[in-house]
Length: 91
Image 1 (cartoon, rainbow, N blue to C red):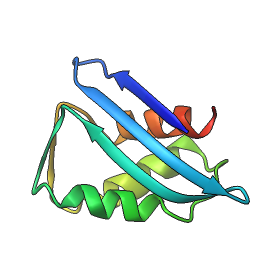
Image 2 (image 1 turned 45 degrees about the horizontal axis):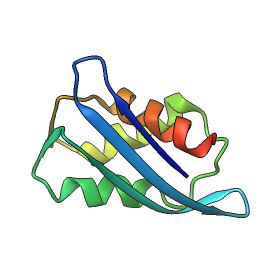
Image 3 (image 1 turned 90 degrees about the horizontal axis):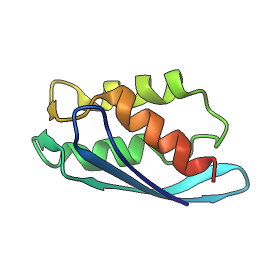
């Protein structure tokens, strides 16, 4: 499953998601937003592995926000990432 979207401030957010038995097994996030430190993206991806495909968007945003843990996300928000993730797993 894949989804990409230009978020309101114009940055591109892309999610590639693999799933099995109603749960996420692999997540890859790319785009032209900025994240510092960069390795935080791996924490976000890991936090989404194992979640049910029908998890509520607000819960997804909460998981992503917790994974940021002081990191700086520029050009997108946790809510933007959650919205694109939900679109990806809905396809």
